[in-house]
Length: 371
Image 1 (tube, helix red, strand yellow):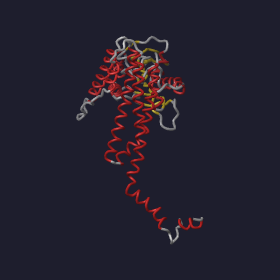
Image 2 (cartoon, one colour):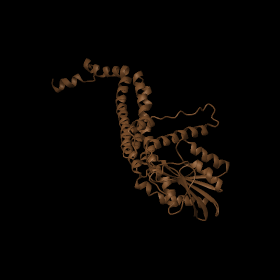
Image 3 (tube, rainbow, N blue to C red):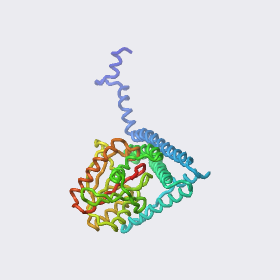
Image 4 (tube, rainbow, N blue to C red):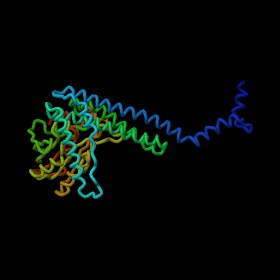
């Protein structure tokens, strides 16, 4: 066939060939009747690869946790079975049909789980100290979270595939990039927690810890310490979780104890915050309200006390990505400490008078951050 005959075959004139009609009509028919199924197959293939990655992330974190535990003194032969059972712990949320009093119920359930897990780890590793057991507990939380993420994503994928329901798989496709970003951050966060290094989320305790440097500190509440200082003629109470073990403490309970000792005129909370796309990591912002994440129990407790006592709450946040918050603290985020300290001093000057008392709380995981 020469070039002229080939052009005649694919021409769009009145004498359009039967072959050309089939070239255009058959794909149209195919996509009308099978387009949804084709799209489902393509999407399902991509999701399946991510599910495999999630499974690998979970298995890797468990393997590394077991390797770390086996290096500790007094490890029992049944340690693998014990670790596996702890990873599979779950929490049944309290009944919220009547929301009155729901926060104390949530607090009780979460505290029971945390304290029981801590005691279980102590029984498994009786010859270790509190810092080592705190590391193990954090590593188990990471492994448990990765395993649950894999289970949920796999469940949604298999349900959509079983029913051949493309609209059901579409929300999973949209959310999966965010899920994978968090999963990769958790996977990369195993090493710094294992080595006792600070992570990005520890910038709040790091800021307050730098202000406490060289001063004697006192324990107050569960794994929380405070120091009394003087800032710009004001009496300052500096509060943070006790480092360098990876804990977040209970700042709401610490606030209750501090209120019994001092008359607080203002509260300033320092914490990491997820940055928006386009924002620079390590940028520092001032705001209002209780800057603290987690289950919301601690935030509720702090807000309730501050509201009843008519105490204003200010906050200083250091922006970072979700990966930066869980992995080794970057130099960019660490360099935000002087700027954060300056913001704290400015807030104190602008909102309190001399001889008044201000409470500064460093919020976050204090692993690798001393005081």
